[in-house]
Image 1 (cartoon, helix red, strand yellow):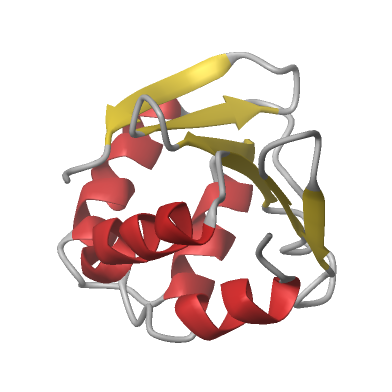
Image 2 (spheres, one colour; image 1 turned 180 degrees about the horizontal axis):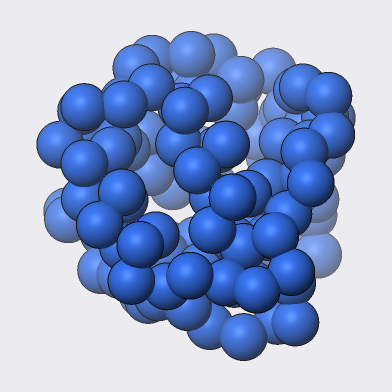
Length: 129
């Protein structure tokens, strides 16, 4: 099974949203089936077969997530990030400001789903393969 260190090594190659599809492919090859990334402090839970979980601890000081999500504004900024116009920390701060609490990636479906604090789906995207 994969380790948190292997995940960190793969993630270190991501410089912008444009690098995200290759990152997902790499961790899928390690055996990751899905994961949840939390905007609040950057901790991530990576899941594999047989209920295996590798946890990557908080990466930054806690952010306050807005109580009310702004889906349209979020989508516009997400596109800019995916085009490589913003770095990861800028993206994270934008997520918090627009009420995005976490996202979940599913390797079998190759989807990324963004959620607000109430657990509502704000956006489901296909990840390019």
